[in-house]
Length: 205
Ligand SMILES: N[C@@H](CCC(=O)N[C@@H](CS)C(=O)NCC(=O)O)C(=O)O
Image 1: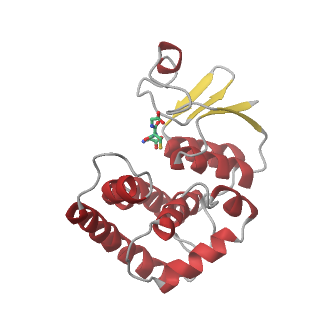
Image 2: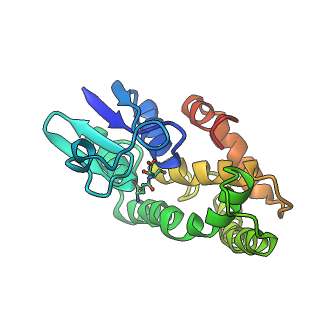
């Protein structure tokens, strides 16, 4: 049985849970991650030396890094990634882009406006964070206007799981922000998937 270690409030954990649901795979989940259960303990660090969630465990097999887990699950099931080489590469490009380009700018704004983390109270830094995040959303808007469907083209892939969860966070942030028409359509399209609605709930921005 597949087992996911991680709390559902983590966007990286929800990437994995959404993929498992899309693939119709049964799994167990154990709550790990602060504030529920500290992953920086020897038992957890033996599985993931980074002390981060998610971790996927399948018998003796242990895998961390949410994108590696998504790719593993897609390849294991032969779904959610195009078979054709270039199309697959483009899907992996957007999957990597979500983690390395789209997500980093939001840190300050999310801590200030969603998590209400003490110390994140500088309005200039919030505005800067939103502006940098918005600049990346511009790229996504242009891509979605081009495809009219999913982030890597006409086919739903694991890249959409990652990108849609980021869009969900953009939609949830209580700040003045630019309106993106193609992104809004995309969000609705992804929300209409059963697993999308499940993992993009209002309680998990
Ligand atoms: N690059 C890692 C990042 C994982 C990560 O940042 N996980 C966060 C939650 S989103 C975490 O474990 N935080 C510590 C905690 O929850 O205690 C991945 O994609 O899996």
